[in-house]
Image (cartoon, rainbow, N blue to C red; front, side, top):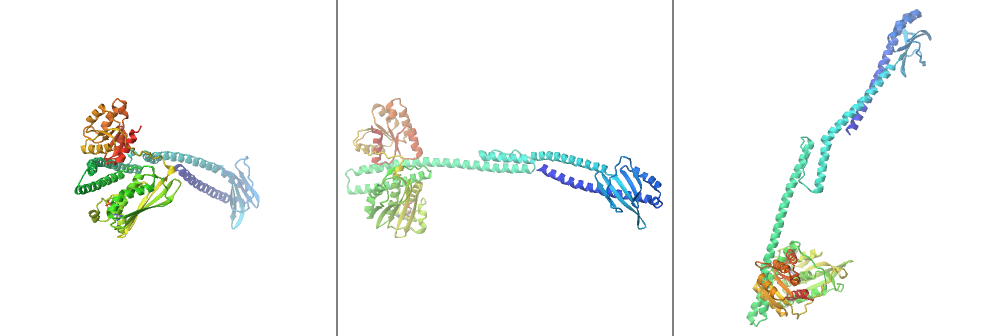
Length: 603
Ligand code: ADP
């Protein structure tokens, strides 16, 4: 660009200068020739008047002094009076010149002058001069050369300047641009521009570096905060795992032993107390479960299963589960499943059960009289999926409009008196909403204070044809005589689990710690091990690893089921990593435990 601009500049100024100079030359020459002609005339006016051509010729010889004058003639009455020729070789350039007119004509390398000589208002003669302009032409040619020279010198200087500018401006900018690209690509904010110059580019680089400093500082701060947050999340999870374990283990015993106690001969008063214990401990367990579930959703560690199941059966089962509460409150209950709802869909039946139990549980809790209904219908169907809508309708106390939006937030209840009157943690609906949304569905509520509420939710299920796996049919077959080693440091738990298993015809040996367990394993034959995870000294994970490491084929294959109260994904992964085959979450249902045992011991 610099070169182009300077070239144009030089060209234009040279042209202007050249033309101006040329014009000045011609003007000067013309003026000089006119004066010359007039001087020649004046000098010869006497010789013309007195007709003395000889003297006139002598006069003209003085013109020799100017070597450019080639020919000079004085014409009197249209006849050549006298003439001068520089030398004989010179050609006379004949051109028709209007007689008596005052003219200078420029030809190639020559100028012709025609000047009339006046005396007392009469034209007495005419002077003609042929003048060589070769010298002028040569001078002009010299100009061309000078212009060409100036042109090339300018071009050279411009190129040198351009190189210098590029070194000082373009290159640093380009380098800054390259650095920017590298940073964008590699996300390495520790890179800096090395340009320390004091000029504007240096300032730009400096500003760029300062910006990078700030980004890096922010990044460091953020990653520190992130680490902090991750650490606190881990600590929270560990705390939760420990807490739920600590809480669920004794609760497990309380609930189990209450059940066992119920089967012994008791009087009415005792049965009443026992039922109250059961109610309270069930409630406590529900709260602990809610908290565990809620934090598990929060940490994004929830996984959904894809089982084939019947929606009809799931809804029916709710009725059975809730029968006791319904009867106690004298509430009607009915289910209406639309014909279009398919018999089998694919999805997480356990979670559906949980959602329905939550909503129906709330409906029962907040309905003093009337009825509760469940409506199920199909709302859409695509190639792979089928959308099912569930409505849980009650005739209870209802929810005020402004509260309807926030009851799905965690720890919110309709008003503070709710807790006192109806109990609860305010987590149920938050969990329900998350469970539904994580399955791609949605939930809303329609309600009028005093008239009742309807909770409406929908979940898209896979059609049966798109089932990835079919649920194994592992209905428990009782009567097997399997020998089980039960390892747990809590005697209450041992007692409780042992009595459940023995009622189902299993032979059970117990061990309170790892040492005793290993002793029994060496001395007796077992078909399966039930292993508590948290024990003092050697814990369940370590003991499992020890058993698997024994150099005997039977210890490498004996099934081990973990008994855990803290069912976080980490925990479960750890179980499998330690060589265990399955896990069961305490407090467990009897059927579930037996089904898992049979599943692992069937030959
Ligand atoms: P909680 O453990 O308190 O039941 P939820 O999240 O299940 O927590 O419910 C939050 C609040 O929403 C309840 O405290 C109650 O005020 C209101 N609510 C939920 N279901 C109903 C219902 N069927 N009828 C009236 N109010 C309800």
